[in-house]
Image 1 (cartoon, helix red, strand yellow):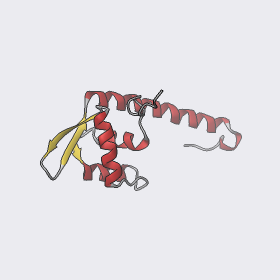
Image 2 (cartoon, rainbow, N blue to C red):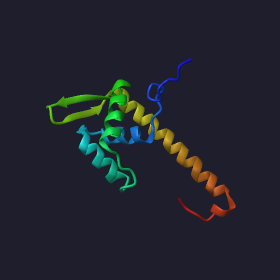
Image 3 (cartoon, rainbow, N blue to C red):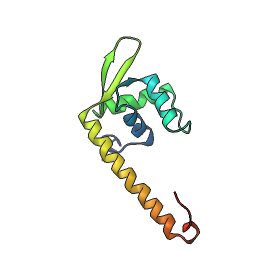
Image 4 (cartoon, rainbow, N blue to C red):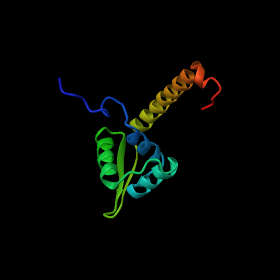
Length: 115
């Protein structure tokens, strides 16, 4: 049986997640790259090749759509499916973070640490 693409399964990589979050307001590629770097406080920097590969996959999965193409800039935005997928992904990531926090609390060494 062929391996299904993560996006087709509704699973997002960290990069795809950050791109979707960036596209809650329609924008072009350069602005997406800047938003990701800003929101991650410089911890994630994405180059054009990675960005446009991700945009292509997200478009094929119907999570985003091309809204404008003036020849110089392509403006992308979330589809309804992308918006719903993003909401599901946020809830999933919140559960994972809670699981991690609880695991640290239960560990003797982390009993006094706050995350």
